[in-house]
Image (cartoon, rainbow, N blue to C red; front, side, top):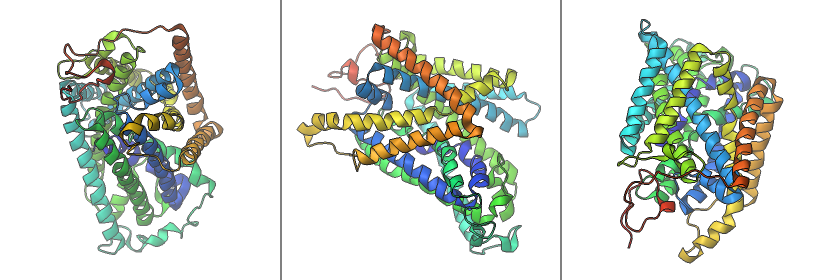
Length: 467
């Protein structure tokens, strides 16, 4: 539920409109391609995470594979991405609440929403998990209800507001299945991959469970498949219920489809759903950013105070520092929306693709080492198939997608500003690796469980004493 909650956000409920406008009915193929890429990335990450569960997840694996600079750059880039997401989601949340309570300043609502999510994360990892479970549950229930109603509508259960126009033939009768050409199918892959961002959270969260290897093995095989089904089936229903050329980029396609189906209170329903998605992403963002800070501090790549944990195993330093940066993003969103805030959004836009590339490269390099380590216990229990060819192919494909961002005029600024972020983090990481400068680590609680050493400890993890 945590993984699905982190993935199904505002990008799903609103962003699919832009994809449909670009690719037409062929958006169904685009979501399938993007979903397959994310699934394969998760399989690669799952192999490493089952063999070595860690709150640092892909940050630790990049460090193992390529050295300190790779771990430093991956961790801080991913943290940067999520704290910007936290700020963006809080601003969006303020705008959504203003639709119902216009007399309350939007910035105040954003601050209140942010403060509530900070409180949830500070309580315990259990409180975070409970909140995310219910947020994700609401979103999943809504999507399932939409799919059931959508298929019933297409089957002719009622006519709604479109009459005969609601038919599967909408997939090919308005300029063909790919009205803007085959190239448009692949152009939209970038958009969908960004909308699916968050599936990798499962490997971070599972490391804080009592049986991390089992949790990671199970969820990396099932959760991503469910996410893929949600995206593909929902996109199919959207382009079948209404002709693709009746959707407007930036306007929720679900709102348009529900209006066509004759659903009452469409605007309020969608606003509520998107608000839940915002709260979910904000909750996940704070959780993930704080764990990235903890990992960086444990590795000596963050100040000691950022890694302090309370008696419940919650990294309070990481949560509060990430929240502070989130508040700065909120301020930028209201004071400098077209300058500083826009730069922050653009400069974090391609970060996920950088991280996916490093996940693929790390898996390719670490497989022989992990197999040697697991030989004594019967070998790896969860393996990425087709190694090294499929991992290399997927990693190369993500590089091509990243290059396409640089070529396309509409995403070029985002690509270039994200490259600046990458170069800064990599440059600092290389400098620290060469100089050997390391920060102190204060994240450990006063008394570690018996038999658990510093390198094995993760915040929030449930341990049993080991003889």
